[in-house]
Length: 221
Image (tube, rainbow, N blue to C red):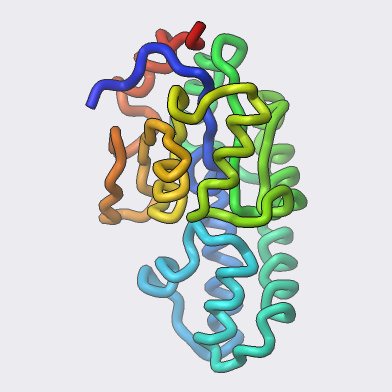
């Protein structure tokens, strides 16, 4: 499907799409799994990727055989991730080029299942915070992805219609949320070999078609 030449706004996921925070999360998750006597691989990662932190930690608590300890596991995981993020986060290939191309011409926002604390840290250490005046985190909504609320709120704060907008995602959880909001969805899977169903699917933001679209897309009048 062709990328839309005019859009009301563009809303980006963050973890694994704009920033290589997934490696930070994966290191923290692997350490947590090891502490509880479990290996951590693609199957375990698939349980967690794209989910809100409370939902992921509830799943972890069940997996570890500690269903009542979800809050404690959440505190532990967030502390580990914060420590990883403090060392700095790199933008995903093509992310800065795309943001440079669209910023100032099309309204943009971030919608993430991460808590505000971690999003702020990631955007700050990566230098991408300057692109976004609007951001929506798990702390700002009643329902996290795969519910469409994060995207609906982001487009609303931009004064844009989701049906005329574009969402960029890297996980199946995020794709479901963006599709439910009614946006045109560009999917860039962050897990190798993970197939996602969206309006446009590519391997990276460096895809020449994405780059060309970023340089020519205009705000819908």
